[in-house]
Length: 268
Image 1 (cartoon, helix red, strand yellow):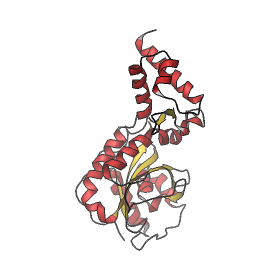
Image 2 (cartoon, helix red, strand yellow):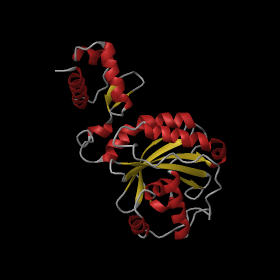
Image 3 (cartoon, one colour):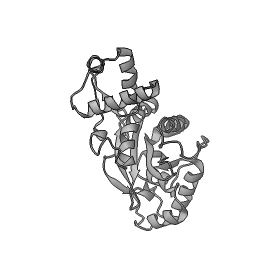
Image 4 (spheres, helix red, strand yellow):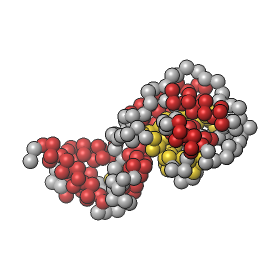
């Protein structure tokens, strides 16, 4: 058995072991069970941790990410479930870097985006969204970012499923204007919604596509409106770097990096 095959086998052994126990396991325990040097064991655990397969608590105990415990490690065709687990470490880092809340949503077949994970900013005033709640794609940055990746006929069909409602006084209610914003997102690789979805909140979202270029999710930084102008360029650069960290089939086929030039409020 060559080194590459041996390493792959070790990774599978580790995943199967962590799947067999719900208890947190220390580095020393794993090293002893698999008769590996601590340095080699730590390297493998760090790799699985960075890819989202494992979690590590405050006591430095490792356990399988719960998202992979259901549905056979998430390798059951549900890319959204797998992405949720893999993306969380990168989301946490992004949240700390920009000082704003980070949200992940997936695209639904009926033209909505459904929130599946978030990393909350550690500030008194912050943006927040309820998890596992769905919203029509037209009204938020995450939905528009994913709609921007679709052929126009598919986009139009999904937009037709939902009546256009104004969530705030700044929200667009004209379909032509909404399509202009989606077209802009397709060109720039980012959808920005300023106080249309929620007052005093700015959503900055980028799509995440599968290997065929089909949007399956969107990454969003929810920024308090008063902090957005000074943070805009930093947020855009950090989001692109975050998505680029995702392993195949995620991240590689998202649109090109957007311009960082200032933009006016996207309001009606």
